[in-house]
Image (cartoon, rainbow, N blue to C red; front, side, top):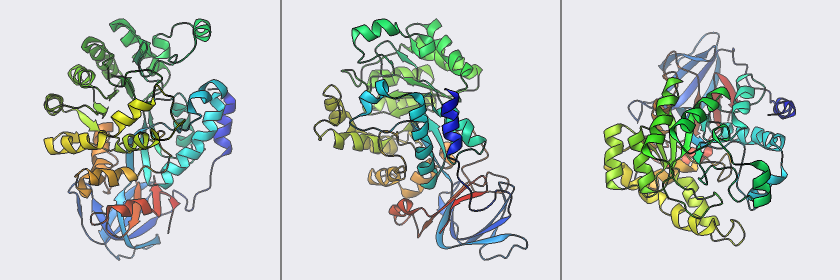
Length: 428
C-alpha cells in the first residue's frame, strides 16, 4: 500500500467518548452469559485498563468509577463477524472500479466501513480477502482509526481461473501485459505453489489464510460451485499455514470442493451452499466450523432480480446459489455441525452485519446460539481466549441492546452502546 493510503486512514481518526484508562461501572439491566447461553440478570461490570476488572451484582456502586446507565438494556460480549471484506462494498460499478480506482481509494472507503461495523456492535472481524485489510488493521491497532479488531487474510489463495484469480474477466491484451499470476499474487497450481503462496501471505503480514475451494458467485466466471483444488493442494496449504500459527478458511459452495477442503484440514467452511449429509458428517468428524453467511446469500439473490446490478455471467449464479444458503444453515444446525457467525459483508452494506442474527433465527437456530456464534464460538474459531465472554481479566469488548434479544432477536438491530478494549464508542 502506498504511504498516501495510510495517510488517508490517519486523517479519519475519531475522538472517544470516554478515555480507555478511565474506570467505568456499566450498570447493565441484564447480561448475556456466552458460556451458558443464558441471561443472568442485572450486573455491574467494572472496567479498568481496557479489561473487565469485576462482574458484580446489579446496582453495585463502585467508588472511583464513572457509572454508565444501561438499565433496560442487555449487555453482551462484543460481537465478531468472521467473514467480511472491509475494503469493498458491492454495487453495479464494482466490476469496473477495480480498473479505475487506486488502492488509496479503497483505503479511504475502508475507514468508513470500519467505523460503521464497530458502531453496529462488531468489535472484531476476520477479513477474508483484501490487500487493504492488513494496513487498516495496523492503523486501528495504533489508535489512528476507529474500527473493529481485524484478523486479516490479505490476498485470497486461488487456482488459475478460480474464484480469487485477479485476472478473471480481463481481456487478452491486458492479460498479456499483466502476465499469468502466480503464488505471489495468490494463484497456485501445485503443492509447491501452495506452500509458496502461504509463505507469501506470511511475508505480507496476514493473520489467517483464505482459500477459494470452489467457484464463487460474484467472480467473473461461469461456475459457482466447481472444485478448484486437489486434496493434496489443500493439505499443503493447511500444513504450511500451521507452521505460522494460521487457521485456514475455505470459501466453498460446491459439494466436491467442500469435501476436499474438509479432508485437507481447513478450519472453516464459508457459505457451504451445496453441503450434503456426507460433508456434514465429515465436518463433525474433523471438527470443522461452518460459517453460513446467510446475509450474503439473500442479498445477492435479491439483487439478481435487478437488471444491470450484476454482469450476466454472474446473475444466474447469484439467483441460484444465494437463495439456498439459509436452507443449508438450517440443515447444518439440525445435523449438529459447529456454527459460528459470519456475513460476507462487503457483499452487502457494511454496518448491516447484525441482520445475520435475524436470518439465523429464521433458519431455526435459537437466538442464544446465534449470539454465542458471534461471541464465544467466534473466539474459538480465531483461537483466542481473551474475548467472547464478559469475565474478569477478559477484553472489555461489550455491546448493549434495548430489551431482551433472546425473546426478540430484532433487538440486535438497535445497538446503542459499544465498548472496545474499554473505550466507549457509542452510548445511549
